[in-house]
Image 1 (cartoon, one colour):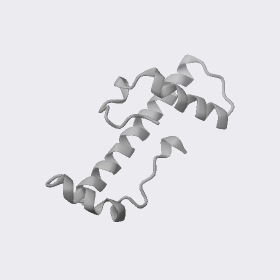
Image 2: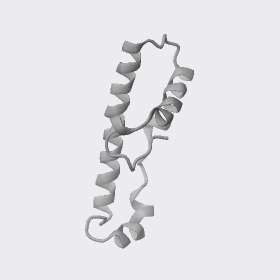
Image 3: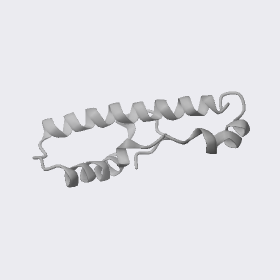
Image 4: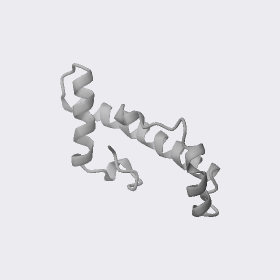
Length: 88
């Protein structure tokens, strides 16, 4: 749900963050005031960075830094186990 092409969480617009917040609000009952919203945003920022880091490490492991064609060839075997926790 969150765009991976944007490198900084702060640059992700509210249009992308709102569905994530709505999904969280469906699973948990909480009052949505500014301090809670800020804490959730901080937590999502951390999870998003961790997810991008895991994806980058997988890409490097598939040979993506040297040759993107090699990474595309190895993608099926190497992407097992990588899940987006923000959308679960």
